[in-house]
Image 1: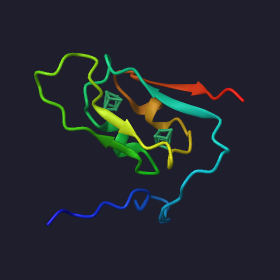
Image 2: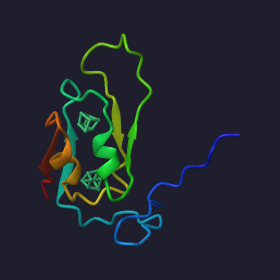
Image 3: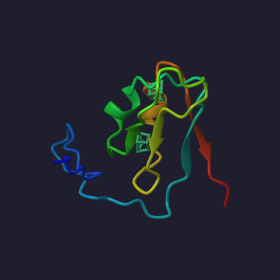
Length: 98
Ligand code: SF4
Ligand code: SF4
């Protein structure tokens, strides 16, 4: 039986639980992935406080530039931690135009 994955329910170092915290319309920046730089290491996912980065199943023979992660923007808070921690500098925080 497939394990149910509840996004945003990660328990964090602060001892708090991000209970299905969907983001409102207040995020100011979006993490944007440069797929050609991303190697799918998933370090960004391990650091994301809202547990909203998923590694996609990608065949090793897939060409460079094939998306290897997906960010669920319904839960992303735009904190930029993923961009900070990515060893390949594959994530850029892009300001959302009003
Ligand atoms: S940390 Fe960077 S290289 Fe690794 S999966 Fe995330 S975006 Fe890709
Ligand atoms: S910006 Fe913050 S909340 Fe959004 S995916 Fe990156 S680490 Fe997670």
